Image (cartoon, rainbow, N blue to C red; front, side, top):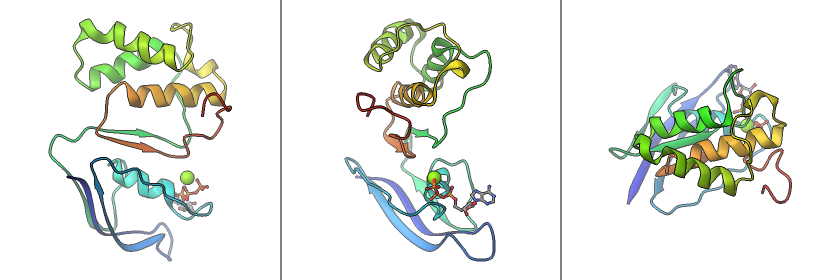
Length: 159
Ligand SMILES: Nc1ncnc2c1ncn2[C@@H]1O[C@H](COP(=O)(O)OP(=O)(O)OP(=O)(O)O)[C@@H](O)[C@H]1O
Ligand SMILES: [Mg+2]
């Protein structure tokens, strides 16, 4: 079953396009790896799929009611946001009833190794910020999970 459909998408920041007229589909159950040198446009393509960046031409269509989570290459959080507030916001966004928040949050954060949910995310190391961003994406139980270099900063156990 088709979830995402990219048709003839082109994107350029300068004169030479990063990619031109590329088309592909993402089907249910697919696990797709995107490989390319630094600066070749991998993050740009993921941002387009996540709806955070427009194409110059071409279209990306998602199946109706598709829930999509996107973990950016760099995981940064605003000052004052705690582990709990970040995950609660994600659960709210996903439409999870508030009565289920605490259980969902404890389960996923526990599995990812978080013990104190009141810590401010800005104080975390790169690896712990990445872990938190992955939990933030996963608690929304997305149909499509876009991960931009998810293993960067992670130790072996984290990977
Ligand atoms: N907002 C922007 N404005 C101008 N140029 C940009 C912008 N975003 C990306 N670029 C340029 O587009 C090119 C592709 O960047 P992108 O981050 O997509 O590459 P990447 O394949 O993810 O690289 P890396 O492996 O280093 O993460 C780079 O040359 C980058 O400088
Ligand atoms: Mg990148």
